[in-house]
Picture (tube, rainbow, N blue to C red):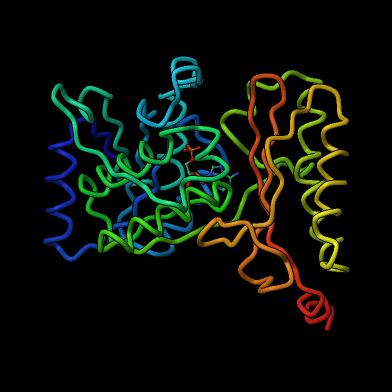
Length: 292
Ligand code: AMP
């Protein structure tokens, strides 16, 4: 595995690979690698001969009161994990190489980025879209693998790829979870012991709510409300949202219309740590098909 920090060197290597007709897949991360990230690398390796993993804690996607400075950066451990997962190139530039003095051009995301995470983290998705576009220009991938864990990010990036005619295939990989259901995340290490015990309730509530909605979707608003109240009653748990959305537009929707397009999304704050998760909505028929 080759470690590259210089953007120009990365670009030269990826252009060379393309000249040699190598299929390139990229996995973009902020580091503090875990099983979720490694699952994306595995998917990338299935799809392409060359896998580039990027590690970049992107200042442009953090708000002023967020955790940019304390975000974990265990680079040596990450590099060892990336190497043993079979990554070919680890691209880890410094912020001033990605945003040199005079930098002034950004991607402006649209309505898909306005609600939920976009509303709670102003500017976040513009920062994400800008760095993803830059990393795509530097790594020149044929395909990029992202996790369903960050479902709105996926919707925003799919929209950007479509709108800007980017010739990159977006693949999504399922959420990797701890044994108790908590979605694996680099930020889980911020949780105290008692917060860690409560954290799996987000996923538990999402799956229970999805099952209830599959039984009867008519009174979906009341079902969502009850689930929210149950979560909010847990000590130290702040519910930011729990909603049914169209997975492509992130517009709130009712489960009756087209359950296949619906996601049940949730975000809570436990102390200073935000947890995000989502589950697909199952239709009754899908459940029965699965049994049959
Ligand atoms: P991050 O380092 O948090 O920016 O995440 C980098 C990529 O890993 C994104 O595409 C995430 O959606 C994905 N990812 C993060 N956590 C998980 C997880 N538990 N399961 C699957 N993918 C994940």
